[in-house]
Image 1 (tube, rainbow, N blue to C red):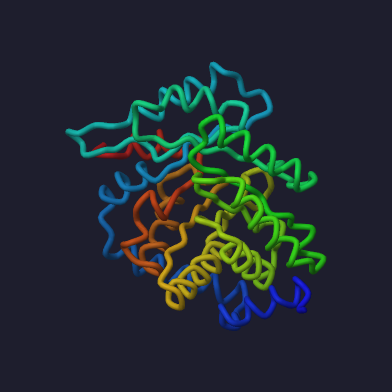
Image 2: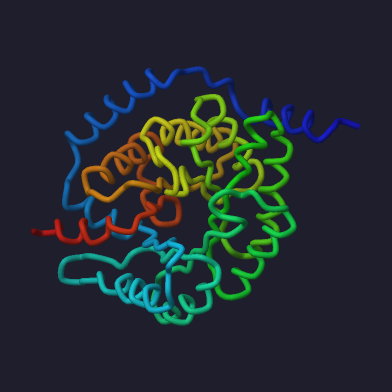
Length: 293
C-alpha cells in the first residue's frame, strides 16, 4: 500500500503540471496584466463590484461585542439602489462572535465568516482545531477561514497539510472553507504553489493569501501563483475554486490590482462573491467614498 505522502505526491503530479517560474518573472507578469487591464477598465464598475466582494473584518485581541455589532451595522449600511451599490459579502470575526453576528445578519444577505482552527498560527493539535471549527459552524458561521500548518509544509510534510485540510473541510459541514496559505511565511514559488495544490485537493472552496497578521501579507506575485493554480485545476476538472487576497489592502488602487488579476487570468465568471473575496477592515469605507464622488 502506498504511504499517504507518496499517494499525495502522485495525486498532485497527476492533477497539476510542473510550475516553473521565478518571483521576478511573476512581478513582470503582474505589471503587464495590470497595465493591460487598467487600459480597458471602468473605475466606477470596479469600485461597486469590489465593495460587494469584501469580507469586512475585525480580528483584534481586544474585540468586544459592541465593536463587532458596530461592524455588522456598517456591513449592512452600504446598499444604495440609486447608486447601484450592494452591501459587503461577509463579516469576518473570531468564532466566539459567530452567534452574535449570525443573529444580527439573519435578515440580510451578508454571510458570517469565522477564522477558526487556531488562527493565525495553526499551532494547536488538529483535534482541538476541528472542535473550534465545528463550534463556529454550530453557532452560525456560513464560512470558515482556516490556516494551514506552514511549518509542516516547510519541513516537507505535505501529507499532514493535505490531511488537515480534508479533516477541517469535513468539520465544516455545509459551511464553505477558505484555506489561508500565509504566503508571506512560505516565501518561495514552489511552497506557495504546493500549498495551493494541497489546499485545493483537500477540498478548499477558496484559497486565501494571508492572515493579515504578518508582513508581507497579500502580494500580487503570490496571488498570481494561486490564480495560475486555480486556472489549471479548472482546465483539468471543470471545477471553479474561489480566491481571497487579505492583509494590507486598504486603498481602492490596491484592490484594483487584485480585481484585474482575477479578471484577466480567470475571467469574468470569477468576479462574484461566490468565487472572489477581499479581506479588509478599512477598504470598504474607502471604496464607498470613491463611488460617484
